[in-house]
Each structure stands twice: as C-alpha cells, then as structure tokens.
Image 1 (tube, rainbow, N blue to C red):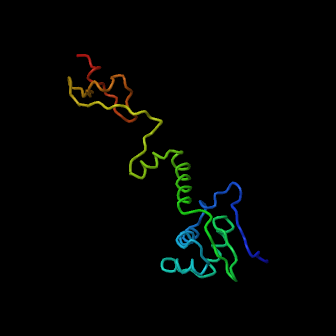
Image 2: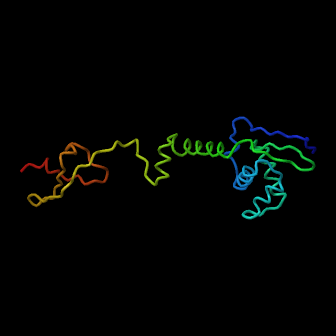
Image 3: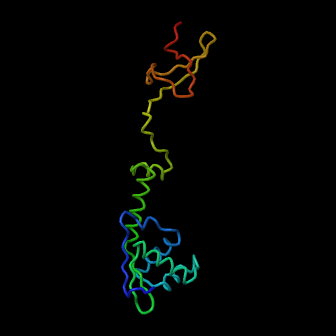
Length: 171
C-alpha cells in the first residue's frame, strides 16, 4: 500500500481522539510536546530512559496517533516528521472537562472537594442543623434532651434511636 508524501489526519466526527489515548500513546505525545516536532527516532530517544521500546513499536504508535488525528505527519526523506495537533494544555483541559462531566455530573466544585479529600455535599439530603444532645435518665427511663436549635418535630436519621426527647416527656 503506497503512502502519500504528505498525510494530514483529522479526527473522525464525534470522537475525541486526544482523550482516547492508551498509556504509551500518551507517553509519545508527552515526548512530542516537549520536542515540538520530531521523527520516530527522536521520540524513541526521548522515551528511552523511562520506557525503552523498539523503533517499530514507536512507529506503530505514531501511525495510530496520526489516524486518531492527534498528530499531523509530513514525509521528510524516508521518515515522517510528526507535529501535535493539540497543545498539552488543551489536552489537559479536555481531559479535565471530560472527568468533570462524566464523574462529577458537570460540577467543578465537586472535583475540587474530591481532590481536597472532602466528601462532596449530597444534594439529595438537605443539611439538618444539629443541636446539642444530652442523655438523661428520668424516672428510670433513658431520654435524650436536644437543645432548642433542633426542632423537636424533626424526623430521626435512619438508624437513629427513637427515644423520646426531654421536651416531649411529660412529668
């Protein structure tokens, strides 16, 4: 199969190629972003310290990236020279947007809470102010006294004991 002297790849409609990268494809893209434009030998040399791979492996990966539209390639002599079609910053932004959309329901604050190690607030359950609780024993019965911050008519949380509160006990 003959390959044209210049090949420009575009992303198929409806596909976000840069987000569909396998780990070695992403490694090759990171090397290419650092180099700006490079051939397979230069990319392989850049990866050699951390991910030594055969020349043909890198060549296959770069062909796949060209087919996905992540890179553009131009024939220079007997080899192709590759250029990224998207900057590293644009790729990061797309990846973060995808994570926010698919894992956090479009909520960037929920992602920030997750990264900070906090549990995101649950929208389904409204927060209920907690009053100070005291356990008392009145007439041999254990009761719970709640300060006025919590209304006495509040429904107990699931699994919470349903002992009468001090305000509800008639003496």
